[in-house]
Length: 359
Image 1 (cartoon, one colour):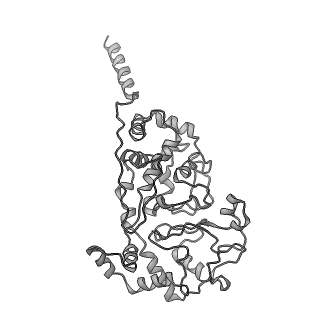
Image 2: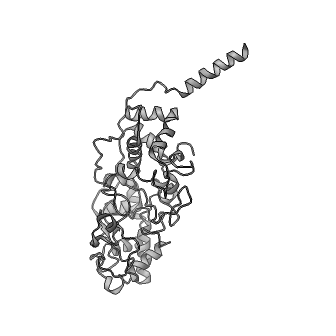
């Protein structure tokens, strides 16, 4: 009799564990913390920001069940300490397969107008749908991924809280992840203070202290960065976001093993062009370029100084291409590097809101 009662009790407990808790759908609007010197972010009308959606996206970003063998998550190739990029030249997928492009840093994505190095995705939600079924990355069909998530009562509850749906699918996963990624805003570096000061934007007392601590080399590097006769970087990297929304052939190769944007548009004029990345947190996000060929910032500066390669599609704004680059001398290179280091935002990479919920 006791065994019979124990068996019945076990079945009841199992049933309760597998049953969705009674949760309501009362989403709380999420208020983005956009720096005052940034433009406003355009949020898709079909994916408004909510506290519940952001939380779900954070859970999913570090969820290894979204990979075939439960070994990697989005956060595996986009690590916080590396400014949400990969310290390796190429990332390794679940089958030991290696990618052919360096993982881009996930910074200020809410202002992007295209995604991936070749710009093949037009929205953040669209971009998110690709890595999970990609055989070189997580290699799990979305149908199986959703079955796994639905087997977890915590996820069932959270999807309902976020979107008011029981039968959620991959589009809801993409929306939640997009909401989380849009919260990942970097705007508290020394450069931000320099930018505000240079643009006559009022500084508060703490920012004034930072401005007063900017070194002469950092200011000189900033001037070189913006100078046509100096480092000449500002054509592709400027403004609060430190990025121009464009595709550029920056003189890496005379012949292309990777066509970049050209493989998407089938336009030979786009061959060898890649999305211009932000320079924010560049100190932390190496290796650099679409193929991670440069291990250090010094390598990058050397490339633009003396290593420019000619090709039919080279960006015409690289004005010193005919002489191999801008020919910076050692002092100028050190000053430019000093400025680039001002783009490091430790508040961003240490923000607890971007870390795993259960590390």
